[in-house]
Length: 72
Image 1 (cartoon, helix red, strand yellow):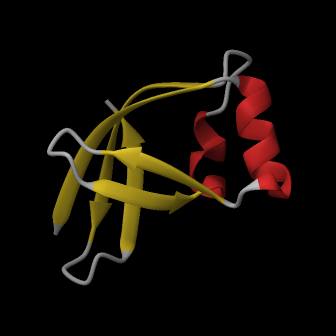
Image 2: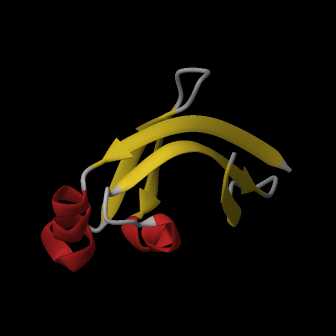
């Protein structure tokens, strides 16, 4: 398994435009400098009135297939 750590700070309005189809993915840069592109729908469980903010850990399998996304 691979794990990637990153911080995210997206306002509520910005995220809604992503989720509603303006863009279907969110691009993040990990602590190690890797650029990852994830479907916006993966972040929906973390959406609050403030948007999406915090530290996250993405876990993938050896083929970089999504396993889970969690807050830290």
